[in-house]
Image (cartoon, rainbow, N blue to C red; front, side, top):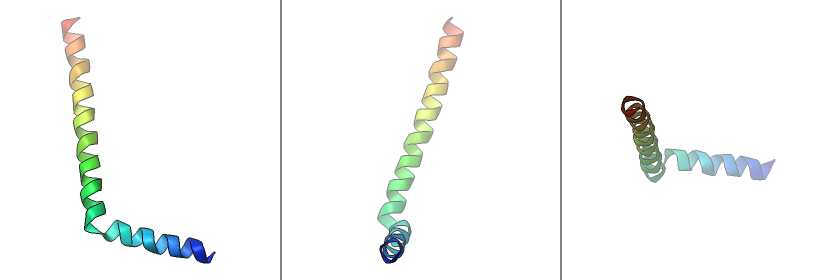
Amino acid sequence: MGSVKILKNSFGRLLKSETFQVLYFFFFLCACVFLFYSIYVEQMMVTNG
């Protein structure tokens, strides 16, 4: 159980760290761009027949 507690503590510290926040934001941004791009391509396919 002790190792799990240490792992949770280090993970919590990682979540609070700025580096992780930047990576998370970058990932979120990429996901949004990918989502919008896929919807856009789908719309173009529909309009072009």
